[in-house]
Length: 146
Image 1 (cartoon, helix red, strand yellow):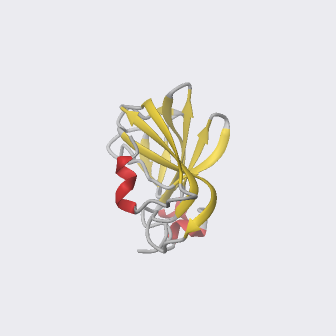
Image 2 (image 1 turned 180 degrees about the vertical axis):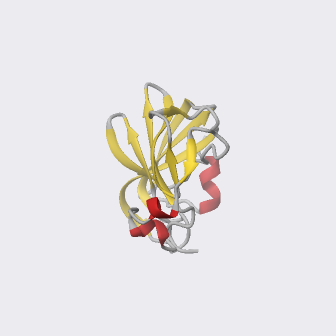
Image 3 (image 1 turned 90 degrees about the vertical axis):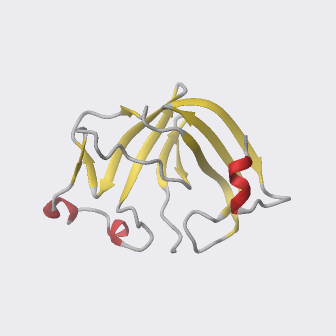
C-alpha cells in the first residue's frame, strides 16, 4: 500500500496533520456523496493511490471536544460545520518534527515525536506525547501508548 495523505487537524488553534483517519458517519444525513460534476473540482491527490479513502477531512479539537469541520473529495457536508464527532472513539496519531523512518505503507512513517490523543464518543480523555528520537517504535507498539 502506498503511504497515505494525512487528514488535517486544527489542535489548540494550530494547523497540524493526523497519521490516522477517523471514520466518517456515512449514514448521517449531514454527509452526502459528491456528484461526478462536483468531483471534477477536487484536488487531484484525492484520486491518487495516496488517498485510497477518496477524501481528506479536516478535524478540530477545541475545548476537549472533537469535531468534523470539512471534507474534500468523495463526500461533502450538507449542514453548517463543525459537527461534533460523537460517533468516534479511538486514538488519534499526530506526527511532530522530522521523519525518522519513512515507510511507503499507509501511515507507518515514524516521526521525531507523536502526540496520541484518546477520544471517547467525541471527548478528549487523555493525551500522550511520545519521543521517538532514541527508540523509534514499531507499528505494533502504537496501540500501547496509554
